[in-house]
Image 1 (cartoon, helix red, strand yellow):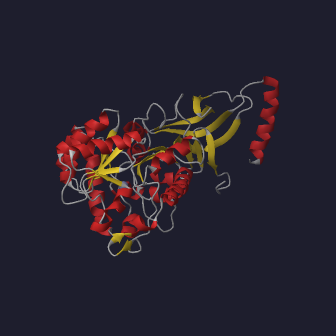
Image 2: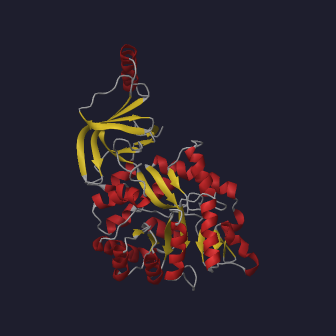
Image 3: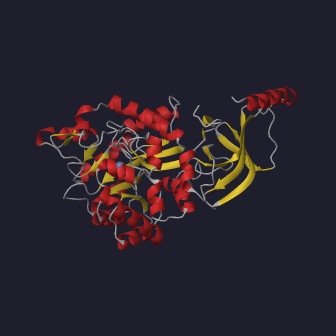
Length: 423
Ligand SMILES: [Zn+2]
């Protein structure tokens, strides 16, 4: 605690004895309160937080006696960020280290306990970077992402609110190159489902073990899920209120997914204008995982850059709804998981998406996409107190998001750099 806050604390503690009550409240003095939804900034706003939730927001509010006070009058305060495409349990070495005889080495080397511990670290790093909500889209072994979500709910460690997708449902073979003798290796992360019975059972296994979303891979092999296949899975998931995210790397797969009624197309790098128009018409969101140059270099696929920037620019122009997703699974030199995620802002800038639109994809639109808009994603009375602060206005300079100085998660202080260092 800084000296100034200590003095304020003592003063308020004395006031508390006199006035009684107001214990357990936290007050943020915001120089600028950014509302991503309207793209506006309100000046000199007080935010009062109690029991993990925002209880009042406004200018001219009285600071309750006994409250813990955070002076962010030099900062821009905004809702915590969302990453709608994470793999918390993965931290893979870049190729070629990750390849043994043409196969994915991490399937052989990694253990579920090791991957879940990696998730603990990734979750913490993401939260420190200002990411307060994620949708994990699998590759977590035997429902490791559900275990991570539950441990976070219990407060066993700190990380973003996590929605889990369990095991990825895919046609035979998953996303791997497999030996016929070791097909089981892919079954650590995937459920192969080719027939209707297998698809129904795969969805039900995920529901049974606690998934919040269903993730399908439409097109990792030469055979892909048809529109009818997708529709069948979407209907089965929909019976219990779950929605479907579809990994699509081709235009044909994205058309099948959109026509089949998925909630989101993931990646979709080479999508045509026609497919983007179709997604818009069917209310299908794009979670574009628009890799930065740094990430593409680690993958060794720099030549994808122009395609990704071009697709993002067209998707924005056409008006497809977009939620930010990172899909970081590799170690990115010089970055932890949190800062690696925010390298993707480069691509959004290269595609000339205006900063207010980028910010919505990271906050209020993402919350709407995930169906969480009544719970978190805005700084409003009654919503979870997931609050961050940056030194510059992100509506004008989106890269300010790489300079997060304050993070509050569900009303708890995770980070407050008063002297520029982390706590
Ligand atoms: Zn992914």
